[in-house]
Length: 205
Figure 1 (cartoon, rainbow, N blue to C red):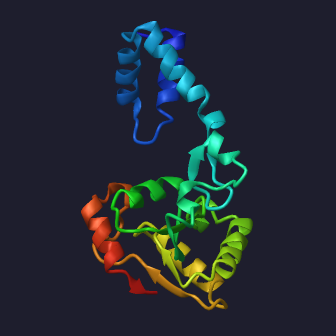
Figure 2 (figure 1 turned 45 degrees about the vertical axis):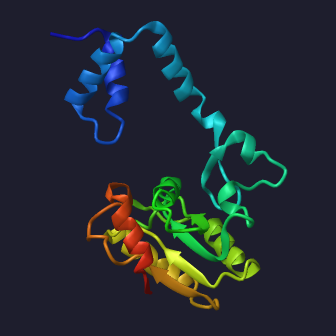
């Protein structure tokens, strides 16, 4: 038995999504076949335009709507000094982590997104320009505390150590999320209450 060529192509594309294996991709593909054309078109347009409509804030690196990214002030609401505590800055690995932390309603400081965690085996390391921008923001805003809000994994530990060394010459307190985060866990798998306790119980790092 061989599926039609276009169906095989769709299954192949769906398998590229994280956590989606062959059987799951097949189930998704056959489910999409039953969708009305209008719904498929809406989904296709949303995927096609995602790069055009979503941008990274030029200040903190969080995801924002394209209209905000092109604003004359060129900053998102997470960078708004009238709404955030400007003496504290949380360094995270990805834009998604910003939204996960915001859901706890425990943190009201600023953010700085690295874009990836340090992974020597995969050749991944934070962009030097992003690290330099981090240092400049700490100096310019007179940041008092930098929270290293990374996954509790080997990559998260390596990144935390790397950032700590990079900031060693600056007059700033460095802390890291502690209580409530089990080893080997990712932020997007932690419930809001646990993450909130981790922020409240953070330790000097």
